Length: 209
Image (cartoon, rainbow, N blue to C red; front, side, top):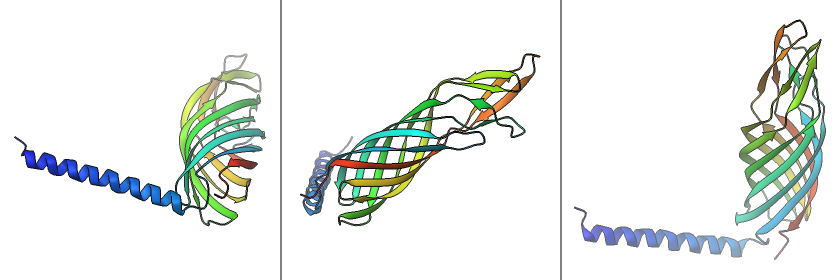
């Protein structure tokens, strides 16, 4: 049977940890020269990987909160319109329709300075929603069905006051699809889902206190 004194001690330790955390968090916020909440809005160009891929536009909204000086966490909501690179086992590219891909990622950015010019590096994890797309090559046709895949993102860039520019790479697992020709021949294709994003945008909020 647990000693009542141990229970009291554990409560004191837990309370002390919570109290210390709240003090550190409050102190961190008072030390930061920037307002903690902001929303990043960006437009850009999506560059998918793989042979036969076609780039397109992307749009992103990302609310963020500075939890401690120089470190912000957020939720990236992005839509990218592009044609994924799709090839057979011999590396021959298929004709793939242009479709949109969406993503919802939890992100973290680290800022290297507290000045008006703020270079940063970051990463994210979350879900990528891939739209269905048709596949055609040498009489063989099929479709890449819609899917949800868990993926990652790494990025770097710079903020100049409320202006933001960045480069991101989205790491998303590939998709395999079988296409059947008119003669009944089956060909397996691999669709590359990863892509790079070049972005330019602005920040709403998050300015100097």
